Image 1 (spheres, rainbow, N blue to C red):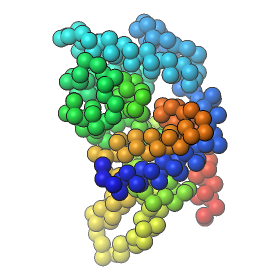
Image 2 (image 1 turned 30 degrees about the horizontal axis):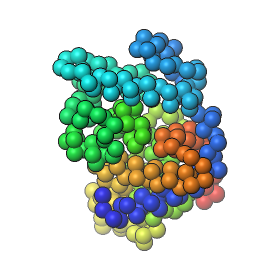
Image 3 (image 1 turned 180 degrees about the vertical axis):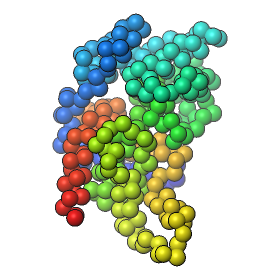
Image 4 (image 1 turned 60 degrees about the vertical axis):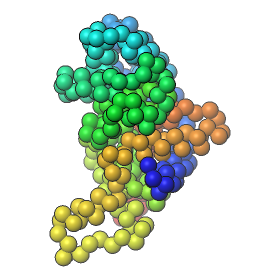
Length: 289
């Protein structure tokens, strides 16, 4: 991560913290309800189910329980270890996360690639850089909504979930603030409202305009136009680590007033995404028409 990206992440994180600060107490209303089938599966695995709405406290407790179960499984060997990891990874991504389209081999790959060569004490890994070093892995954009859930449940102190709602909210705040920072790529999502608004393009165009980049003329073919737009986005391979830097900076700023964990920062942004954030964005867009 070069110095320019670090400075961009700092600017983005400061703006994100300023946006979140007035809403920080709304985290009490966070909800990620599990279906009755998912709750039954959680009970079968011995995980705390908590309230039916899947509030912030219940979500924190579930994450902690699964993180400990992963560490217990990591101490096993051979087929037993592999089977336990696949079961846990499948629960996080398919059952809790609701991404049931992930195939068995995909779940198996996620369970293996990030943990197979890690040291015995998983808590010793404190950053994406350390994970890359030990596991020899990258953080591809493909499948990011799935594998980031798994990383978050394993390393909840530094790894966060990156999905369509998170990316939407980050880009919406970017657009409203006119940030001098590249925009985030938005993976495919399931929210009917958010999918109607292309914040990736909005934030990207705002960034290019801020930097004085003019829209290429008619002499430019569409491939060149795509490349021009691509320059406004964080590169795919750097998206996840850049995202973590932005969120870490936002947490640091929020933490100056009152204690705020990294995962609570993510949950607050996720909760606000299809509530406050989308409405603030629509107000900004409608006033510009």
